[in-house]
Image (cartoon, rainbow, N blue to C red):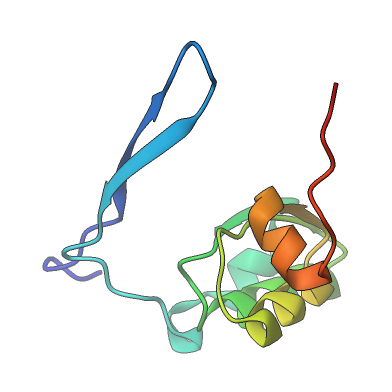
Length: 114
């Protein structure tokens, strides 16, 4: 516990005509978790872990523990360097990945849905 820390706070505005999202966020007092902060015994007993992309340092430790315990993980990755993102994808079971990030990682063009 760190009394000086605060989670990232976000407000998302969605344009009702275009469905375009604008995300306003602040991470002024955000402090990243480290592997030493993670209670692995607790993680291994969970059935599902939702992991945000902000936790780059602790994420591999959490994901490996979940995988060892045959649990599920949902990754919400907004970006990052390709090596880190691919490493997290390999450890996780399910992922929320923006199309722009997926396109960058794969080199594929965006598919227009009709």
